Length: 460
Image (cartoon, rainbow, N blue to C red):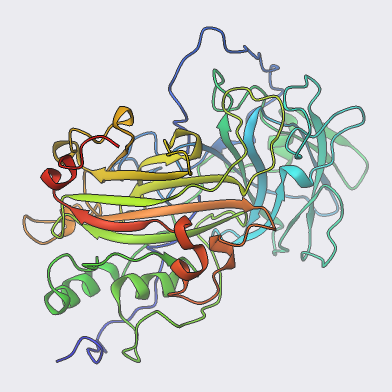
């Protein structure tokens, strides 16, 4: 039976959530006694914000490590109910960081609207530190936004975050902070955004009162990842495709479009027997993803090679970590590559743009391997970057020796807010299989190697 015609009619693939993406913070752990110290103001209340997904523990053993969080990003969620006729405002301060946003979702984690930093008009006398050419380190950093129930209009109002209308007026938001400046904690030198509610009778509620008025859910957002078809499909097709499945002997990058397509593409399973290349699926990102990122992913397996190398060109990005004073123009705001558990959707380890060592032309080589397989020359001093592979494979806890789960890995690359003039981005990919043609060197070449073969390269 050929692979192309192989069909599994007994499986009901109604739940395709295992490859949904979101985009929590381990940031750079360097220290510098001379780094600027910024003391955040005392928050009025933090009761509105709960810890979001996090990769602080680099495996799916942590129940909050789900939805593929980036280890250089901090996430906080807020779920509440708006009283009929009330107006809800959020007063905040721009963090000392690479990027921030407020994103609204449905209760199932489907992204609705993003109010990103550059779109937030500051209070009078304040400079928005995220706009190209503006200064980043001003002390006055305040802004005011409104949360408004209703469909996203063609021309959104300034500083308004739209949330979908529901029977109960329930709301789900995620607040993100990317790469706090050096020496700062995860909040990046400011307090949490603060809520203010104006009730229909004109009463104003602030501080701790807000949490009662809005009936805040004092719990983390739910992990909607339930990969029901993952194990049946894996067990059925692995004997057909052979060693390393669902990884390919020649790994390829595929853009993530939507849950079902991502799943079918990785597992090379479509009802018509054709591959995912050449298809133009609808782009619908769930699982608490941000609208500001797009992603490519690739499956790998240690059964096919203990060492994986990525060689490509790094896009220019806004440099911020070292308390840079001005926002520089660049190809995109942020870039990262992570290793992940495909089954649990946990993130293991990430490298982001300012951590990547490149040559004079902007090219890099990243070695992805377990610590015991790491080549001796996979070091920054030799001109190479190292990224640890998933220590648990795809994270399936019932795996047994030799069934491939412990060897399966997943790589994920993020492109955040590319410059409109920069064409070689994930955002420009509309047809699966054209990722390399469109992104060129910015979609790095992936190759399997042995530890010995890589060590034979010496230093770069």
